Length: 442
Length: 193
Image 1 (spheres, rainbow over the protein chains, first blue to last red):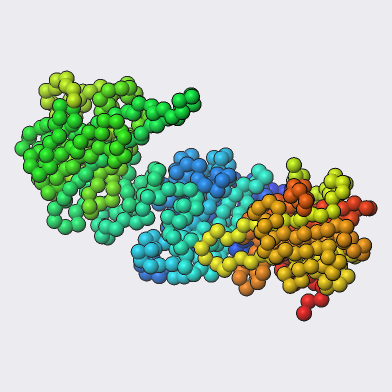
Image 2: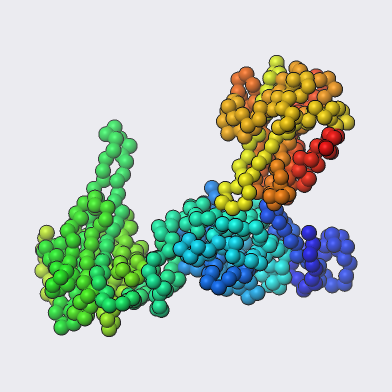
């Protein structure tokens, strides 16, 4: 259906004669063509690159009108042939607004609520389809659905002129709180668009499930966050994507624990890692490969200048309720325990602390950091989980400084480190603890 | 091993399978995986057509309200899912030896019931296919996956069995229409009330 026409100076490489024929136009300039906005309906499939030869980039704009208190987020899922994401990072959303190769990026739109810019030529070859979705933030808790959203549309525009080529008005939603607006997909070497306009009642989790993205928990239950750590901080998704989680991904990246009221309470630091159980193909059937033993520990410096180390080595487990207000729970020597190793810091005594350096070390065995996929998760009741992944590795070194927790007034700041050292002493010197070290065993 | 057809392709049926008279045509599809929107109700209908491409008698339009042709050659088994193989949403049983001499073509169609009211079309249906099976062995002889071809259509002529001399062939038609079953029936010469 043709709803409007506009003339533009156009950058399409095209056969003007064919255009003239197609649209019955035979005007003067070779670069002036008629482009028609095509309005499409739910279920309709249309050619994009075939219809607009030479088009290698497009803008996909999403727009809506929502009542007060309804927050909508646009996301894009880059999907493989199976209809699932090939990699978690192919899920483009506010926390991961740009694909690794930059082919898909999300931004606040001019003229639309949100826009995706797509470099079709650069999209990874194993991506067959890109689904554009809109979700209502915290919909289930707030009892909101797309019935409360009006004037929903998706439109596809030229990347340079912003002239609208395709428009898809979305209507007839009832109980859905996450919707797929449409999908760009490869077909015989071209890109086509399919107007989906359908959705799910189960929020972002249902949507993610449909596209193979793991979501641990939909929304944080903490009270409305004051800055500087709202739930929507910049955070690239890593499996599993947990929207109530803050991930420190770059060296030096820092976040402050915020307090809702009163004392900080317990701050728990968990180290977990991959438990390798490999199948042997021999006659003996299953064979457990030797587990890699990671140990969690910390160096601490109290506000009165006292320094020490807490770790299983030398049985320095500390204590929670009294000096030094840090305690290490047991030692998971085999990695068989699924909850890893835990360190608790007594946040009620925040003023006792100056800084705490969280580290992991390999007590014996080869420093196969890459195989262990170590993750440190820091939890405090009022805050989203803070995650630091040991995602850079140095197989020559047995010690990894993971995070620095520093007191700032009445709260803590957590900084990502993930730096490797030959041992305690080298790490100690690097961060200026300057304690005396001797070899020991546990 | 079944012959897999592309839209527009034609293939021998009885010539390559001598002695074959009892066949089944199974049709299947996937609909709405989403939560919202109305239920999808897809129906298979069969038209027994003469050399002009029309039904000679309204009874040659075999559908949910007329599950058997007068000559007994075409039987619509409704929602029977116990036919050979699994996954077919609807199955049509055909005895080629009983098909009236005036019938040159048997057309298989899928239509979306109440599509206009429910704002539904074949663009919202995925993995639609038709397959021809030997009724005795259950072997799949011909398969046609409709794939990418449809979007705003509400009725699809999937394929046709047609006489070629003394043999039967199958054609993967894959033609879509926007006026649902009523439009299709009218085109085939059925008197629609």
